[in-house]
Amino acid sequence: MKLSRLTRTATALLLAVAVLPAQAELKVGYLNTIALMQNAPQARVVQERMQKEFEPRAKELTAKGEKLQKSLEDFQKNSLLLSEDQRKKKERNLISQQREFKNDKEAFEEDSRLRQKEELGVLQGQIMAAVDKFGKANGYQLIVTEGVVFASTEMDITEQVLTVLKSLK
Image 1: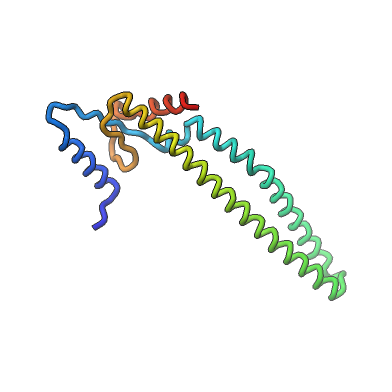
Image 2: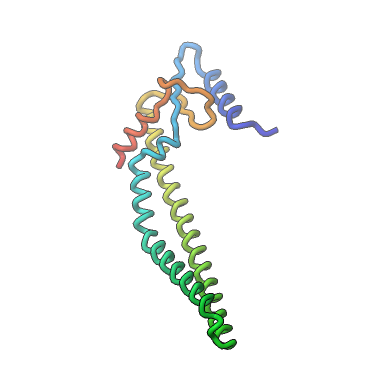
């Protein structure tokens, strides 16, 4: 039987509470990982690095696409003026250019996805290190993220962890 994320989180919380001695106080924090990922200075650095890395290729691809589109439009306008052999040769050439453009575009998208995945992994590692550092320094026994139905603002430690992330730059 598959358990929902909420059920697993609730079960983990209950188990954590059950194993602590009765006199010990459980210190729990809630972390909004989406807000953390959007506001972390490291995320901005990653975005800028990705843009800088892929912008020249994106511009080149855009220019190539515009040139191909212009060639297609010119061919459609002038195809009736060409001989049968010239028209077929031009048509084959355009088909070849379209295929090459499609391959270049797919390669660009794949390269971009792979780099984004690599950078995301590094960023997640930095975030986990900051959460770990914050949790240990402040005596938290449990820090939860997604799957929480309700967390009071007193339990939300997102801004405090964001401060730790800013200090790790």
